[in-house]
Length: 122
Image (cartoon, rainbow, N blue to C red; front, side, top):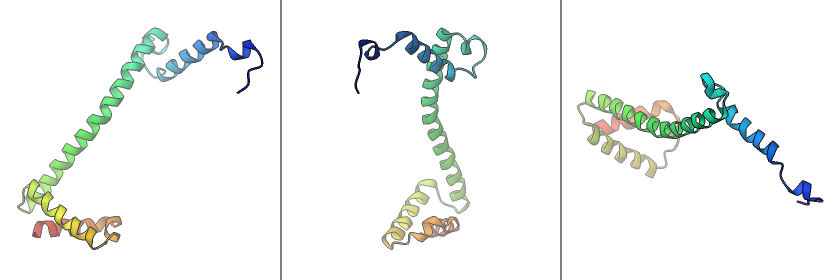
């Protein structure tokens, strides 16, 4: 990058500040009240929103795992198995499938019934 004059090399602080403020206000547009107009309030609100967004991604994973475990537990109890036993049997069945290189079954949604039924039988 070639700068021919000192003016081109130095950054213009006024325009930089303007665009920095606009970036924050862009993220705060949908907030209610003065938080979407006043820069000072918008900075706090946007920072808080980003922190909560990061935290919410972890919470979503945790909640979905809990939901998944409760659903699998309910399904396995219909067959008279507890969750840990069902999962161990399912792991054994899947490892046998992988060792046989039966990869086609993984892409077919109806084929998941087969390994689950075999896990109940184990």
